[in-house]
Amino acid sequence: QVQLVESGGGLVQPGGSLRLSCAASGIIFSIYTMGWYHQAPGKERELVATIRSGGYTNYADSVKGRFTISRDNAKNTVYLQMNSLKPEDTAVYYCYARSQIAPMQAYWGQGTQVTVSS
Image 1 (cartoon, rainbow, N blue to C red):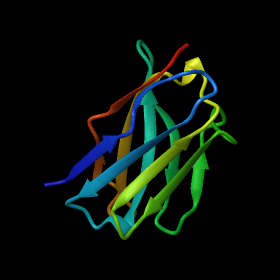
Image 2: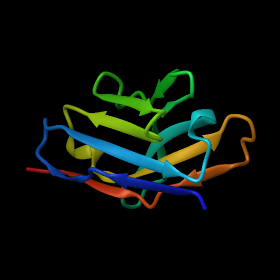
Image 3: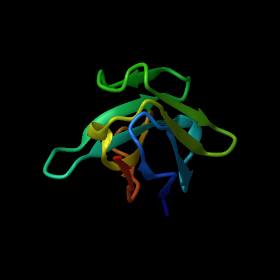
Image 4: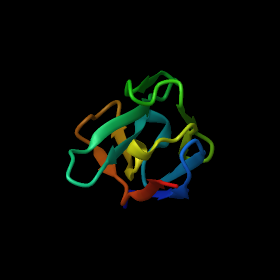
């Protein structure tokens, strides 16, 4: 059974930082592209960042220079370091895993709420 379990969300003031973690089980982590998406109320789910098994990263323009995605293959965990947070970053953040060998094998976590407010 595949599980993606996010943690690290919460309430933070504008300009603050949070670090999200996503622990994966039930998959061969090293062959999966991992990613983070977010969904604000009334909006579509959007890409935040992805990282391939070899470390290649991709970011949404809105988070470039503020967010950093990383992975630890030994711990089957992907991270999202979020700095200089803005109110518009408020959303539910979802972890995503997609096999690089069999792309139809894709999974989502349950989401973690991030709220940026003073």
